[in-house]
Image (cartoon, rainbow, N blue to C red; front, side, top):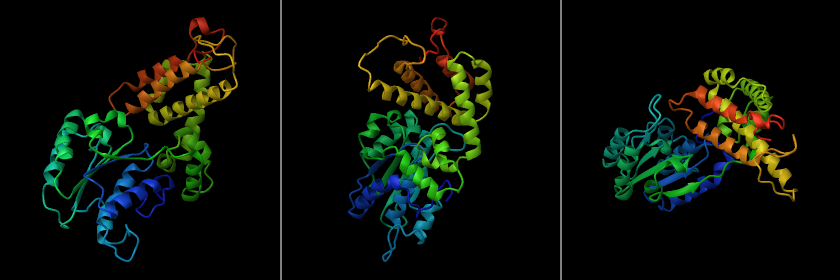
Amino acid sequence: MSAAPGLDAVLPWLQPAQQAMARAIDNDRLGHAVLLHVPQESGGEWLARWSAARLFCRAEDAPRPCGVCLDCRRVAADQHPDCQYVQLLDEAREIKIDQVREMVSWLVLSSHGGAHKLAIIAPAERLNRHAANSLLKTLEEPTPGTLLILVAAELGRLPATVLSRCTRITVPVPDRASVLTWLQAEGPAGVDWPAVLAAVGNRPLAALAANPAVVASVASEVRTALEAACAGELDPVETAESWSRDGYVLRLDCIENWITERVRAVAGRRNGQSEMRAAAHLPARGLLLNIRALFESLDLVREARSLAESTVNKSLVLERLLRRLAPTPGARARGSNLE
């Protein structure tokens, strides 16, 4: 299987959402707008295309979508005359108002099949303010027989006016065990999939598309560098400049997972602790990590990840993160800011 699964793919973490969409389609209870809230690189766009194929498939004696009829093949090839995709164009960082206006104009035309017209907007959180506002009238006064499917990983970036007008189907973050089982069955043999997931997180399609050797190398380099940063033994400027030029997003993923592991370690240890400490730093070197500082660092790296495709100065973002991990002068005797 490639990183872009076919309509016949089996993605276990999406099956409850598929069943919900299938019931709604079969019972004609989809409404006019559905929001698929699916974690990044976990198959949100695939689920939207599968739903489109289920809607248009004409198979009578086979499970739908059959994947072989003309309508299914057209959906899979993004060439169905009654299905339009509104996506990021080329290297654009947002979906613009002209794209939405073109979609709205297309929706009011008669369908080729005489039944439904469907527009898929993905990633919907990339709609800019003007595009989102332009979409509202269609959400409020839809043309009969039309359906919108919005795919989003970050609901916080969608206007409340859009969210309130959609039927929402949420897919939880896949658990590590099920993703690992799926990768071992569908991916190439001999890959250290736990190591890949430790770097990219529980994002199955990202893991499947990754080069395992590159991921392992970058993850090891990042881990070593972060430990050096915590000990005050890393040059943040030089490291940030180097990382910003090569594998920026992968490095952010590795940083996020490294911090997350430490958060889990602290939370696990504190479950057995009776004494609560509110100080910024813990008194004994190496006992525990400062949970507050860890979460602050986690917020920084997640903000950087959300802006990865913007014009933000990547070197400065990384330098800020690395300096956040380094010990302050008053804390050097105890270790890093996270101790």
